[in-house]
Each structure stands twice: as structure tokens, then as C-alpha cells.
Image 1: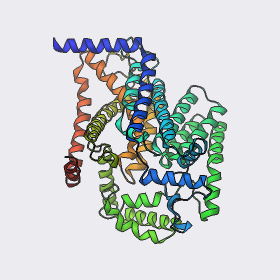
Image 2 (image 1 turned 180 degrees about the horizontal axis):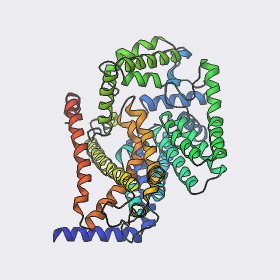
Image 3 (image 1 turned 120 degrees about the vertical axis):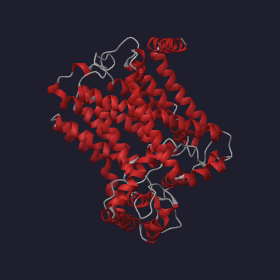
Image 4 (image 1 turned 45 degrees about the vertical axis):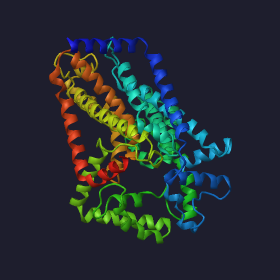
Amino acid sequence: MKFEFIWDLVLCALNFVNANWKKLLWGIVFASFLLSLTHSFYFQIEPSVDAGAYDRIAVNILNGHGYRQNFDLPFEKDNSIGRVGPGYEFFLVGVYFIFGHHYEVVWFLQAIFHALSVLLVFLIMRKVGPSAEGPTLNVRAAALIAAVIFGFYPDLIIGSSMLLAETLAIFLMLLSIFIFFRILDKSGIKLAALLGFVFAASVLVRTPLLLIFLPFIYFFYKKKLFISLAIFTAVILAVMTPWTIRNFKVYGAFIPTSLTFGDDLLSGNHPGSSGELDDSRIQFTAKYNDYDMVTGDRLAAKEAIIFILFNPLEFIKITFFRISMYFSFARPTGWWPYLFGSPWQAVVLSLSSLWSVIIFTFGFYGIVEAIWSSKKGMPSTGSGNKLFPERSEAKSKDLPYTFFTTNKMWLLAFLAAVVLPVVFIVVETRYRYPSYAFFAIFAGVGIMEAIKFIKNGQYKNLKILFLVFIILFGNTIFDVVRNFDRIFEKISGLI
């Protein structure tokens, strides 16, 4: 009886969602904006470390000193080219040039970017979801769930309140993917050019997004859209070439974006490496501080590659650790200095961990369901599926095409493209942020699937969901045990 009452409440909530989905969508978007802005103005986080470097570079450009970070070092050793960029730094230059050196404007704009990203998550989910909709369990409800998960993710709210590149990068990444799905519906040269421009801008802001280029290229090639492919590539080159030429003139080397690869690769791949940015890397990376930036980066990358080639089993072990850390529930945001000593720190840590449980558990479950529906071409229940009708409609002869070309599979390819550069180099909680958008969308799929099975009384079909949670929870226990001393030290400081 109690369960039936709860289920009636769930159905009432879903009916309300479907009747008022437009108002709810704009409410979620506005609430995400307001939450980001409120957090920014409440804590007023001063730029430090990476954020401080971006800020100094932007100010130096405006003061006519060029793209510099530290004037105490010779130009060839200045770490400005060793920071992610230059897209975000130039964004700050534009803001400071128009409004003056005021962080409040940046916070406001980044709150807008975050809110627009929430809207894009909803719109992309609509593209990924099925065309046929039921009265209760449909893609609109799933898209709203995805928007809520992404919009209120504590990690992303905190990130939007700092002078960090992630918020702008995620917005540009999602915008490029939305344009891509528009091209899937109706290809055209203008859309291909727009895709090239937005994607190139996202790479200039956050270089690891470059791997998304591969699914784009594969699509144009398979569809034989060679003119669109040429336009897409030409626009990317046009956007990135001026900065590349500047770097060649200044450093005498081919540097399309920045010099971060060598240091990051060695930081995550050396004897005794944990796979993250800990102190163990210093003895391997510090010796290159005496070199100029280009030489140091090349030598660091060379040392890391040699280590990988001559220690393949050690590299596999470290990569396994990185994968474990990436998908661990025990890697919450909340250890930022501005939270130390604040009663809000425990709240942020708890909510961040909770969100990671939700987004990874239901996200992976949604991925499993997406792969199953596309690969099998039949309903998992054996009797039809209103939420994913393509399961029952796909013919066996169409299975290869169905599996590799459904919108959900394209989204899975994009997710892989943002995860792989991290798990093979170095893992930090902040480096997971771009993947949250994709996991939120798949979580919307997963939650809708779970509700559908409960509604139909098909509880056995939830065993995959529980299996996913058990695997992820077991991985978290493994991560905690392996890093118990470090975690205990942090928790002790919190108490």
C-alpha cells in the first residue's frame, strides 16, 4: 500500500511535468543561473593558482605587455604558454576591456554560460531521445531530469564562480554538439562552417576537447559530405592558425594552443605515479624548470613516453588507477581553499558526492540501455517499448547501421572523446566536468527506464541498475582503501 502511494505520487509528478514542461524548463534554467550567481557573490572567490594565472595574463595583455604571466622570469621561461588557453584568457581580455577589471562581470557571464549549458543539455536530450512519446514516460521528462542533474551539480556551480576555463569550454562544447545534431537533421555548408568555428573556439579554451574532432570527421566522411567536411576543416584552421603562427614566431615551434601536454603526461606517468597531481610528480617534472618552456615540455613528454613504452604493465596499472579515480564517488568537489573552516564545506562535499552517485549510477545505466536498444533492435522487456520504440522497429539487417548511427551512439562517442584524454594522462576532479553533461543526459535516459520498469512491474529488469551501482560502489571502496591515508588526513582536517 505504501509503495502504491509513492508510485501514485511519482505518476502525479510526471503528469505535472508533462503539463508544464516549458515553464519547468525555464524555471530550471533561471534557477541554475541564480544559484551560480548567488554562490559567486556570496563567496567572492579571489583568483588563485590557475585562475590567478589567467587573470594576470589578461591584465598584462591589456596593459600592453603581451601574453605574459610572470615578469620575474625570462620570456622563454614564462609559464603563460604552459597554461590552458589562449581562448579563456582572451575572453577575460574582452570582458576587462569593456567593463574594466571586475570579477563580478565574469561571474555574471559565467552564470549565463552555465544556464545556457543547462538549456543545451535539455535540447540535446530532445535530439537523443525517441521521436514517439508516451503521455507520461517521454523524452521531455527525461530531458528535464537531465537539466536538473546538470544545472544543480555542485561541482559546476563552484566552477562557474571561479575564473576557470571549464564553464566557457563546456558551453562551447555543448553548443558545437547541438549544431552537430542539427546537421544530422539537415546538413548544410553554413552549419558546417558554424560547427567548425564553435568547435575551434572550444579547443582554444580547453585543448583536451580536441578529440571530439574524430566523431565529427567520421560523420562527414560516412555521409559523404565532403564539401561540408572541407568547409568544417577550413574554418577550424582559419580560427586556430593566427595563434599557431604567433607561437611559431615567438617560440620557433609548432604550438596550436599551449604547452601543457608534456608536463601533464609526465605528471601522470612516471615511476610510483598515482595517476593524479600529487607531490610524487615533483622530482620528475622539477628538473625541467631550468629549460625554456618548449624544450622542457618536449623533454618531459619524451621521458613519459619512454616510461610508458618500457613499462607497459606499470602504465596499465596506473591507467587502471586513473579510471578508478575518475568514476569514484569519493572524489567530490569541496576541498577548495575558500571553503576551509566554513560550515558550508561539509554541505558541499556531501552534495557533490551525492550528485556523483546519481550521475554515474544512472548515467552508466542509461548507457547500457542505449547500447542495448541500439544493438539488439528489440525491447528489453520482449513486448515493446514506448520510451525507446527503435528497439522493436529495427530489423536485423539494419543492426550495424542502427548501432553506430543512432543519436545516443554519437553522444556516447562524444563522451568517450572527453574521458579518454584524462584517463590516459592525469586525473583530477575538475577534469571530469565536461563529461558531466553527457552523463547527465544518459542519467535522464536511465531514470526514465527505471521508472518505466517499475511502472510495468518488471523489477527483474532493474538488476542491471543495481549491478552498475554495486560495481561503482565497489570501485569507490577500492579507491578509498588505496588512498586511505590521504582521505583520512583531509577528513581529519575537516572535523
